[in-house]
Image (cartoon, rainbow, N blue to C red; front, side):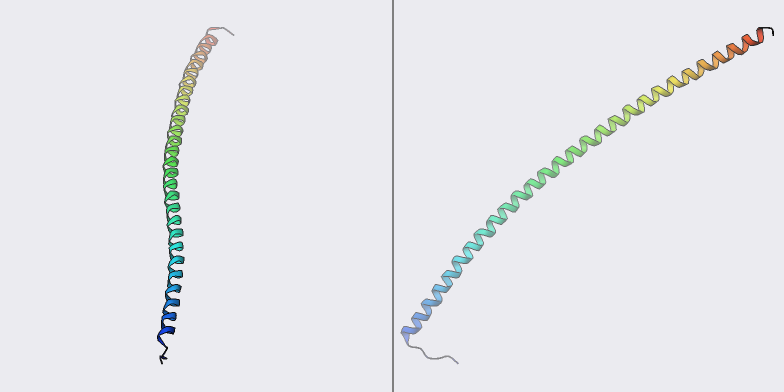
Length: 108
């Protein structure tokens, strides 16, 4: 049930209500400003994260390339070692063949 109020008290009530709404609007404006600041900060963070992500991808690519070069160098060295060992085996085979032939020539 609505009570009847004199015009002056209705004005006062309206003024109090208006004042309260003004206070709420001021408070909401402050909250909105803080949210905008947080949003700007998050945008900066996202930009930085994207930059770091790109840096990490580039660094990882460099590591992969270095690893592949290192593996290729190791393979090349092992191949050279295998060639040297094969040459040594062939030489030992010739020496053994020569010694066997000489043993056959020398009378006992």
